[in-house]
Length: 433
Picture 1 (cartoon, rainbow, N blue to C red):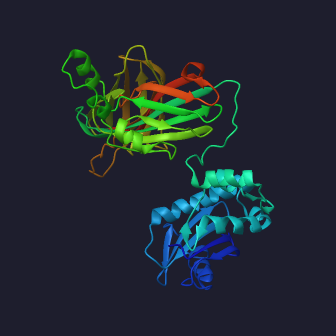
Picture 2 (picture 1 turned 30 degrees about the vertical axis):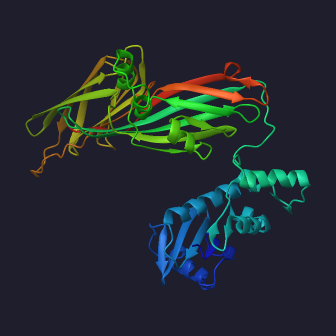
Picture 3 (picture 1 turned 45 degrees about the horizontal axis):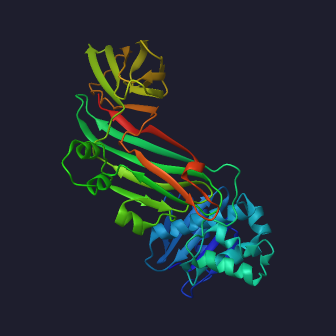
């Protein structure tokens, strides 16, 4: 576990020093300053080993925050704790800077005592810590407040406080997906996956419980196993999720048994879940490249861009980046949609289309003049890359239902305004030439 935590300024001066275990000596402070902060060469790795001591460090503006240990610890857990510590300080006193740390050093020591116990990470949620740690120190609480604090620390709903009220109960759900694709020039998919997020904004009064359902393949397969046409249609429209992670508010037991996502949402914006899928992906665009080399000083590239989504949808913010040889002297461009421009600094033609309807085609022709070269080295033909935004989920994910229940305040699903939006974007979307 973590033996100590130090915070330095950009000069290497120690601002905060907290040692949790006896195996970390005071000279560890100087070792990090000499070997990392004052190092002549640039330190690229976030983990530095000095004399059998591991230093896990982050730099934020002019501040270094470092966790020290002599044991074989989980590196991901240590960095998560450091990021949570920085986020916690930001929530208490805003921007994390040398002046802010000096002004709030008493508060920081109080927080460090709560965050880590003998080197083991504990609570890092600002909503819970703010109920009993204030700028002046530990707050004197009444028995009622003490009961409330105990329920938040040990109970089920530490991410949401009581007494929230809104004039209108609204719930916004965004399905945000990034399509990653590598395709050869013949149209064969070499690798592809979709990384998705379900982001919600909750403006609901009281302590509501929400239920969210999607067309996961397991959901469809757990329905009635009849062979009629309706069941077959449902299974065809379902998706297979390879892996997913949830926000801490989700009741995992219900998801495993019923495959429904039941949760009490935090107030405001939060990420409900992340998922990844690799099967039955709907690729929004198809790029058909054609390269003709006309001798050693001329080349012609023809690109056909096809939209594969429904005609009622529009693709937006479309940008196709077509690489050109290093010896390019000039480019003549002709396109039937959008605008195109040759960027010599990137050795690429950038083709931008503001909007493109579904089941449409756009074409670009580039006549490239090349400088004569004595080298016989062949052009490697880097892949064509693309960015876009479309109003549907390429994985095929659909929200089957989104329900809200609040028995104490007496409102339910019909009294809640809900908005659902699907956005598909390009991740690493490339086609080989």
